Length: 418
Ligand SMILES: [Zn+2]
Image 1 (cartoon, rainbow, N blue to C red):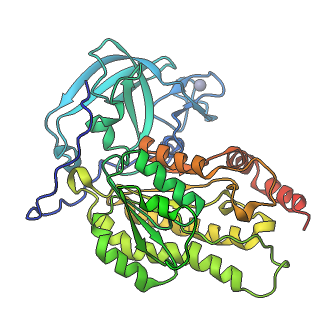
Image 2: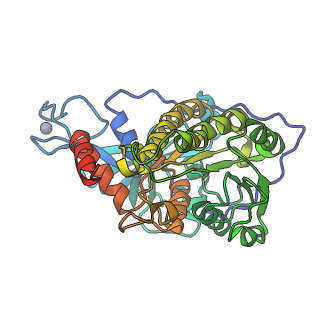
Image 3: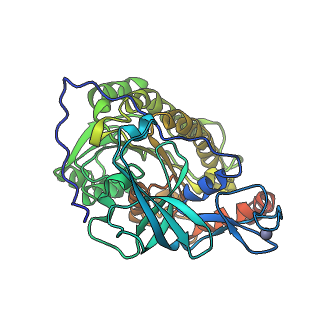
C-alpha cells in the first residue's frame, strides 16, 4: 500500500543540483492526438468510422480494414492487467535515475492491449485496472494503470508523482494576492498542504479587504511585487526564485471596453503591461532559475500556472482590449511552455469564463466564483492537466470554437450589439 507522502528532507547544500533529464519524447504526428486529449485530462484513442475497431498505438489507417477515417473518441479505461514487470535497469538516462519502475500490459475492455506505467497499489495479474492517459515530464501522453477502486494515498505513488504537480509540501509563489481570485488561490493552496506560499502585492500602501486574513495564514509571506516593474520582479526573484516549486501568475488588469467606447490607449496599454509584458518579465526573471531546478530531488520546480481567460481564444467585443491582451499572453505562454518543457517544468494555462468580480458586473450569469477557479487550478496540478477550461461558459466556448471558429466569431460580433 502507498505510504502517505512525508515532508521532504532539506537539501544538502553541498550536493550539486541534478541536471534535468526527460523520458523518450519522440512520437509520430498522429500519436500526438493522444497528447492533445491528455492535456485536457481525457483518454482518447482512434476508432474506425467503418468497422468501429478501436486501435492502439495510433496509426494512419485502421489495422483491420485500412480505412483512414479514424476519429478520436473518449475511452472508458476499464481493463484487465494480464502481465507485469519491474524495470531494474535501463540505458535511458531518465529511467536509469528512477528504477525500479513498474510496467504492465492491460487488455482494455474497448479492445486493444496497451503497455502502461503501473501504480504501486495495483494487485498482481490477473487484476481489474483503470487506465488513464497522463502527460509525462516531456509533455507527451503516457498510459497509467490505476487500481479499479480508490485506495488510500493514491496520489502519493512515487511513479505517479513524476506525472503530476501536487502542491502538498511544495513552495508556491502567487504573483498577486490582491484580487479575489488570487486570494482564493492562496487559500486553496494552504488547504491543499503547500509548505510555503509567497504572495505578491503591488502598491503595498493600498489596503484591500482579505489581505490581512491571508497574512494570518501560517504558510503565507507577503512580498511587495509590481509585475509592471522589471526591477521589482528581479529583486523578488533574487530573494525567493531559487526556492519556488510552483509559480501561479494571478496578476491581471481588466477593464470592460471595446475600441470605440474609450478614447486613447491608456487602458489598453495597462492591460498589455500587466497581462502580457508582466508575464514576459516574470518569465525572464523566474524562468531560468526554475528550469535549473527541474530535477532537484523531491522538491523540484514542477509547474508554472498562467491565469488567462477564455477571451484569449476569441475576442469578446465588449471586453475587446482585454481579450487582445489575453490573446497576446496566450501566445507568450505557448513559447514559455516550449522553453520550460526541456526541464520537465509543466506550464498550465487556465481559461476561465467570466469570473464573478467587479469588471464583469454587467455580464449575465453564469459567472464563476473565484473559489471555483482556485479549485480548478489545484485539481489541474494534482491531475497533471495542462489546459483547463473552468466553468460552463468556458466549456461552451471551447466546443463552439472546435465546431467552427468563424461561425462563433460572427455570433459574438452580433451578440455584442457593436
Ligand atoms: Zn476499420
